[in-house]
Image 1 (cartoon, rainbow, N blue to C red):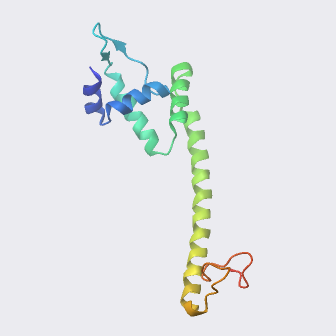
Image 2: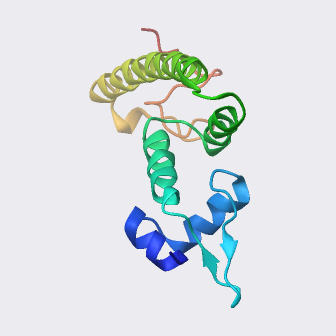
Image 3: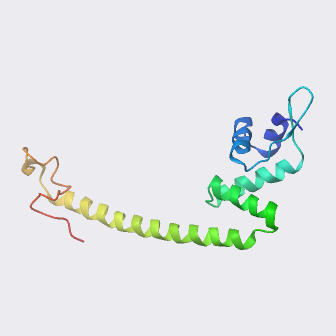
Amino acid sequence: MRIGELAAAAGVTTKAIRFYETTGVLPAPARQASGYRQYDPDAIERLEFVRAAQAAGLTLAQIADVISVRDSSGPPCRHVAGLLEDHAADLERRIAELVALLEQVRLLRERATTLDPAECPRASQVCHIIPTAGGKRALRS
């Protein structure tokens, strides 16, 4: 099948297919005498895997690595499990950071309800709702 047919079947753009070829997640196809790419039907399954792996949060570099493991050593299940474990730990760290940030934003929002805009210093501080290191009132949780 040609690139447009593959793109339609896999639900991606032809530009994405070309990009996947350059990153190594999709092997370069055979070429017809006319120079058109001629894709194997297995390319649809490969593209579906790439999209599913991206949806799980894997990067294209990680996906290419998984494919390389598959092509050279067989089933990459342990490798994928390790990648997913690392990704889950990273997500948990980021979620903890976001929860802490949310708490700070809530404290600032509460602070905003207690301060009078007329009392906001004009010279050095932009807005007294958001305290700076040099400000008199540091925000504490």
